[in-house]
Image (cartoon, rainbow, N blue to C red; front, top):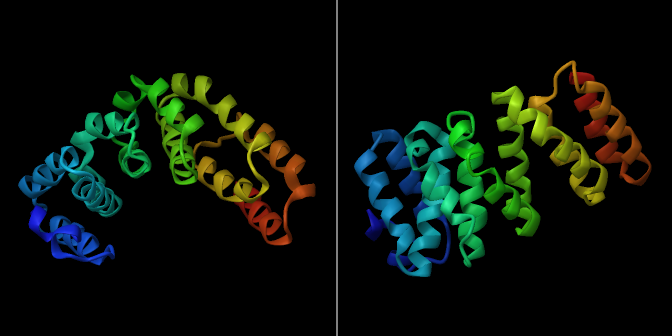
Length: 203
């Protein structure tokens, strides 16, 4: 499988990696996926392509990569930023199925959220929201932090992150969620306000 990666084909684009993910999904090729996971331990170019293949696979069929939750969590501590945000993207895809396993290492996820890139933070919102949705105990710990994030994140992130968080909002926390979004409105663009109003209406 590794010979089909973009870097091994002399390509600088992601098309071969996406095509490989599509192949793995179509054939439910678990052996091939295992080979790609092993590629995460190889040199940087190969590892970078492998994580792309894996989260593209997960976005299409999460259960095909769900058993590698431990490997994705370990990537959050990588010195290679591409692997950190790729790992968080993979976790976002499988969090519905592996909430308990992810929660056992929640501090690792929180650290990556606090120190990671924009893409890492974006996908951590999905991970946190899915954990909240999976378990009330998890929600009691995590949801207040999500509200704090909505109060303090950059204006351009408010609408997108509010959308990601909305999947875990229910009647018990709808009021504080909506109040928080309304507090941010004065510094948001017209387009962002429309996104938020649409979101709130949907609740």
